[in-house]
Length: 183
Image (cartoon, rainbow, N blue to C red; front, side, top):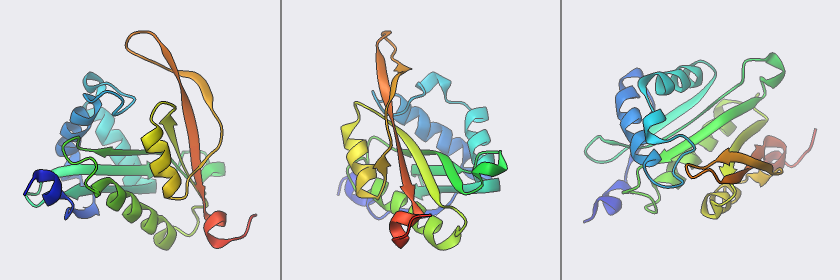
């Protein structure tokens, strides 16, 4: 059985402080893959990961998926921005899936677990938002399949390593689209 097939049975759980170093390693592996993350591998460090994990533990959600050997193979997080006017929003949503298990279903499972947690455990959250690279059509289709809608285009927002520019696509999930009524 390949690692990919094994990892479909990943255990999804809340992240803890003990996950910081495995998450740093995961993010470095994903960032080393072209188009994997906006940050490059050398921009991933303990401070970056501890910062988003702390924010998510205080005002959001942070989940990890472990394979059958206990290795972290996926992570997802989002949190509410500091101003109270955004207390109904989960923002900065980021998902990272180890390149060796992409396509195995782990990403969908952890994202669905995340969204289930939002719907069932965070009734005050009315909006979840993320940003995807314009060229990452696979990710945009994936997010759309989970109920996210494209809300526009941020032109020339990403500067590539070679100096070329790419647009970001902001997307959002609205609770009202799930419950059937708009505010």
